[in-house]
Amino acid sequence: MIEIASPLAKGLMELIGVLGIGLLIAIAFLDLDVKGKVQNFRLISKAKALIFVWLLSTFVHILIQIAYLLEQPLSASFDQTVIRSYLTQTSIGKSYLIQMLCIALVLMISLKKVISAYVALLVSLVAITAPVFQSHGSTSGYHALAIGALVVHVIALSFWVGGLFGLTQLSKANKLLALPRFSEIALWSAIAVVLTGAATAWTRLDSISAWQSKYGAVTLLKIFLAIILIGFGALHRRWIIKSDYPSVFRLVTAEIFVMASTIFVGSWLSTINPPEREIVSSPGLLITGIKMPEPPTFSRVLFAYDADGLMLGLLILAVALYIKGVLVLSRRGDKWPVGRTIAFALGVSAIDFATSGGLGVYSRFAFSNHMLSHMVLGMIAPIGIVLGAPITLALRTLPIGRTEQERGIRGTFVAILHSKVSKFYTHPVVALAIFDGSLFALYFTPLFGNLMQGHSGHFFMSIHFLFTGILFFQVLIGIDPMPRKIPHIVKMIIIFAAMSIHAFFSISIMSASTLLDNGYFALLERPWATDLLADQRLGGAIGWAMGEIPILLALIATFIQWIRQDKKEAARIDRAADRAVAMGEKDDLALYNQYLAQLNRRDNTQ
Image 1 (spheres, rainbow, N blue to C red):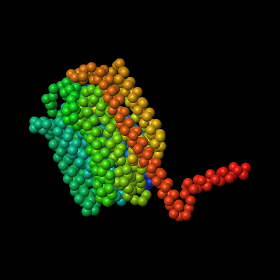
Image 2 (cartoon, one colour):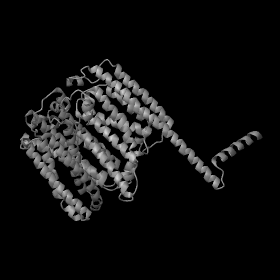
Image 3 (cartoon, rainbow, N blue to C red):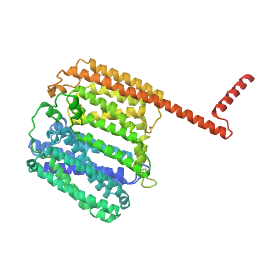
């Protein structure tokens, strides 16, 4: 009985979570707002109630899972000690604990403003994807691709299924306004679902015999349901183009039923072990998910590749949005500088090379290569991203409000840019503290060794390095609009401070007499670069060399920007003076001389 209840409880929990996320999507993107304030309080109440049910269903699933694992009656799972041990001492239990904490946080967030709905939506996506990191993908031999593809798959399915459910909860008039926007969301989500589903199947079913297994049969059933959903989506888009809205909503009930069935089948699939593959086990494979590579050479680092599905999905989305923005401007007749597109493309390529390419592969096996990847993510790639001006492109192409009162996606984005939070983080001292201070917090505490143990830790470090680098270089050399104007002299002071702090950090690593990885690299038992302390010191030297060069380039760029700004200001003053003379008025210099003469006469009369 418990064996049947376990996948059913998991499927019900995931379905409720997806529907709750769908209501948040409706509040954030589909329903009309008035100057950024949510007006549909009934929708907020429904969302809060459904998310609370999601929390309860997660707890029920945990109890059933404990009974299933311990092969005991469900009533015995209510023991507090057993529950605490499961949630704090097992990997899957910790993921469910994170899920419950995130759901509880969503319940505490007020949804009266659209920005709050964005935050709640982001936290809820973390909640629904947390258990995915402990799925069977870690045993497939393609750990990073399998887990990352599953995470993107779950998020895309949440937007597709949940968004459709959220659409049905709007008023009739708002449904018609929201339908074209949901159609765009559904199209992007459907593409992501198909691509990630194919990637997941490829990592686990690589032979005809594998497809003949129980796992393969359930996968075929899920593919069949996905094809039906794609057919529904194609019909919907055709009817939307024809403005045949009654036909669109006629199939919504059937579509939601098929979507719910797909979620249950996916949950069932996650409880089935994929076919075993003939993989030679090794400590490196068990810990990192990929087999130990050969000793690093230039060609091996250049051509090695192990796709990080989650990071790759984010990069594909970023590139797709950037290209769409450029195309939108082109259709308007506006030009987007080619140099910015090239800079953005180079930045994205550097990120891919440092996460999925050779640097990403070898960074999991040697500290020196990890530091090399860190420097690319935190120092080199951000410069390309910043010079690509993605914020400016977004401001020029994001959709505006559908009514005069609606703030819209663009208006919300502008509000976020000018918020107190943005002003705080873009303060040069804060950006410097995050950029350099986090290095000491990461590498000189047990945090580094703990994060190296799993894929989620690797992903967190990569995202952290990338975002802190983007923030730092955006403050210094960014061409996008900023919530505060920073004098160039302050920028140069910050750059010199960054150079000094980064040098001190690198020297500290080079002079360290103990390993910083908490024993991680020793567990890998790599046959090359066996002197772990020497490799760590090499990493410190790499960090010093690669860290100083980008910062020095930022110093040069800041100095050039300062000169150009002075030239523009001088030209502006000259133009103003010319206009004043042409109109028979005194220019600024003449007025200033007159003011000095008045002061001189007043002093002489006293």
